[in-house]
Amino acid sequence: MLDTNRIGEAADILRNGGVVAFPTETVYGIGARAYDEQAIRRIFAIKARPHNNPLIVHVASIEQVDSLVADIAESAKNLMATFWPGALTIVLPGSARVPQVITGGLTTVAVRMPDHPVASTLIRLLGEPIAAPSANRSGRPSPTHVEHVHRDVGNDVDMVLDGGTCRIGLESTVIDMSPDIPCILRSGAITIDMIQAAIGQVTLHSPSNSTTEPKSPGMQQRHYAPNFRIIPVPRDAWAQTLDEWRNSDKPIGILCHRTAVQDESVTFYRHIPGTDEEYGKGLFAAFLDAETANIDVLLVETVKEQGVGIAIMDRIRRAQAIEKDNLNES
Figure 1 (cartoon, rainbow, N blue to C red):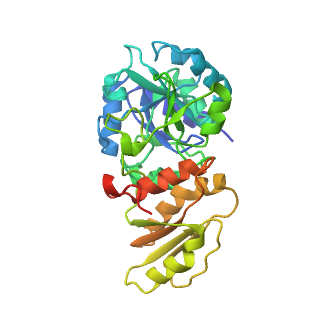
Figure 2: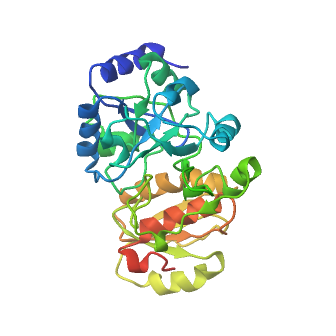
């Protein structure tokens, strides 16, 4: 049941310059009033987040978008009508009112309308947009359970709103509408096929070819990374990979999906069966739970890069990357 009294307290905290962790359908976020530059700078400090990494501004109505952007193209309006509220962030030309700390000094702003009753109620009660990155230290896996928020940043925010387990578990898809052909900067549950069905041709950002400042969160070469090494494992390579690691002196873990791997020698084991969407929902939680087992290596099953599998493999690659040159190692 929605606790509107507690959400109202959270809105008052934001109104008075505070920061609040709250759930969305994707992951938990740390929010501040979008027009409160001092509170937003506090978010960057809590996360130890680079200041050139833009934030997403969360809205509860199209009217709130109007104060954030300079222009909304018809194709962007089509995306809003099709996917909002939902897990799609749209990068648009920003208005002069948007603080530069949100945009990373860029002329664009990233906006989305979350599809979660706690998030939407919080924004409505506040009466203003909320700028919010994920509720974790910069570069770490995003939290999808409230206990993970408490573990990482709970002592540094003014309130944590509990909304249960996030329904999607992967950060929103981000699409940049400023090029002639819109470009997906970050993949998510709203897939490239779904977007093309709504507005026609789009491109997919290539991390290896990028030399510009990030226009969206989640574009760093190493991101979503736990405190252990990740080894991606194709479905048909489990036997060989386990043979390679079984006799090592390192505590290892297994995260499997289509294949129910059995190995009693591992320190951590998590099997997430079902669809790729279910695998994506449990991915970050598995990373964070594995940390408590004090493993050195996690063997992670890969998926086909189609549909939401594109987003899953993006997260796995960024979580395993040590430096730019080995981002695409497998």
